[in-house]
Amino acid sequence: MKSATTQHRSKSARQFGRTKSPGGISYATPSEEDRPENNFPRTDARYWRQRLLLRRYRFPASGESERDLAAFVDYAGTGFFFPLGTPDVEMAAAKACQIYQTAVKQGWSDACRHFSR
Image (cartoon, rainbow, N blue to C red; front, side):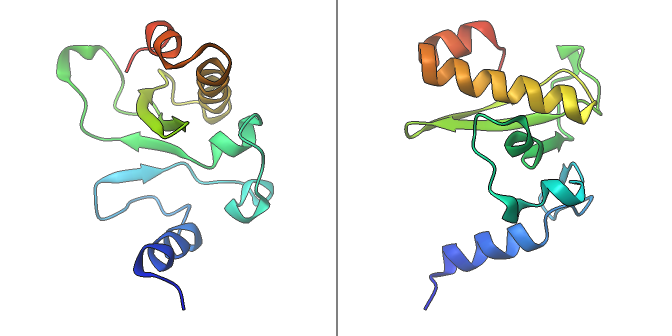
């Protein structure tokens, strides 16, 4: 029997691609090859493309567009939301992948220093 947490995550995976969630976060719609069940490695931008978020609530003085994508990047039990500075899905996924690889290779302190949160 699945736990409530597992069931919730499975439901989220099935509903991926909806344009709005109850929490006010929108998801980038994946193409057929980018469905969550394809399980790409974290070092592949397609993995991060599946996890892009459109965060509606931004700090007004940040200068960021309301359409810019963000991603929650996690590694070794730690994770942060990173604004990716672009509404372009491919560019945002590549940047999220770069942030992840920086965290893995150089550590979180370097990743947070090089990429704004």
